[in-house]
Image 1 (spheres, rainbow, N blue to C red):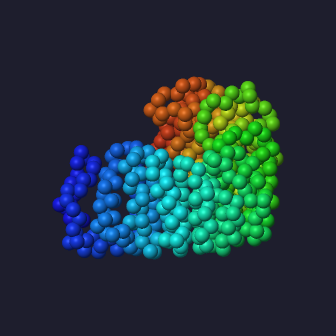
Image 2 (tube, rainbow, N blue to C red):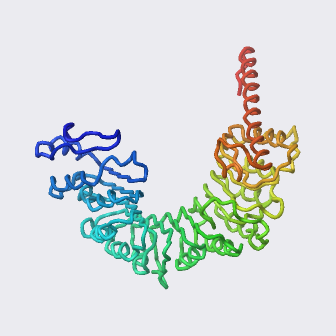
Image 3 (cartoon, helix red, strand yellow):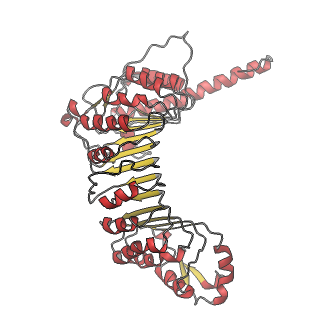
Length: 477
């Protein structure tokens, strides 16, 4: 638009200085026809509030409601500001939705103008019947309005919603093109249908569910006859699981209904935030997930990402990690996380890390509890084991002796020569610039510092050796 139409005030606000004229449009329309993606974000940070709602009102009047961006394909509107100005701008969203729009993402966390927002959602199927992807997130319970809209779309390929009615869920289960489905967090609850079509979700490849409890995901999966096409699955809950049997149940369903050759990414988490408020004395052995509950997953040989986070932890040992490493040669991201300190020391030791380095050449991230008080004896004549891909290691609650930090650092720097970050549970709970607050944090922080030193010294030695070899006319390998 012409430069004299607007002015910047207070360094961040665009203010309209005059009326919009017919002569203002030709240059705008030329460039607007090239736009394929549009995104607008409203936050509580004032530096982003550069357009107030009067801009949208004036544009609507000047264009008589015609689309400003006729060829836009992807549209996103994120309102996390909780202010009246953002709410007043929301009804003018159709200004940016052309006839060829295919993707709409709307997150509306505002208390104001909710009726207008819902009226817009209700009108979308009639205005844009050919949408292929929708994403809706609202502060209030709007399941009925969104479900009614979803029932009128038949070509959706991707859906992200907090909840759906039983009828809407049954409808999307029959869509032949739906490849990605995300449900949750269902803060207001969600009622599942009593049954799904026998061939439910015939094209679904990625499924993500976040609910109050893992039992919701278990009940949902039981409605399926098969999940054999899923390559990615995520099941998260807001509430901590009080029994390891829940984990055994959901993993058993995954093993029974998913294809061992197609599933590549699996995430299961029974808590949603990082907390330090669990008293270890309240954790019983029945809460800890045993290795036998995880073993059905070893049949999935093409896994590249496995993220398992149990609030009360996992009881795994070196033997289990060996079996895992051999059967998951393509693994890149491996996570066994927990939020509470275990009653007893982990059964897995530093030898598990050597095993992973030996059998998993693509692994770049590891989260695992190990007993670092046991230092494995390495045969100096044995072939060197090294994993160049590993960049991030989180040892969670791993115990370590004060006198072993140098030995542990030497071992880790040897098997993970390119490691960039070493984290622990307590380090993640404090700011990066703050000093460690307890012995566990201090010891692992010292290990991380020593790793940097050892890697630097080793690289200098390698450089000097290569220089001497070059001077002798020998090409270094």
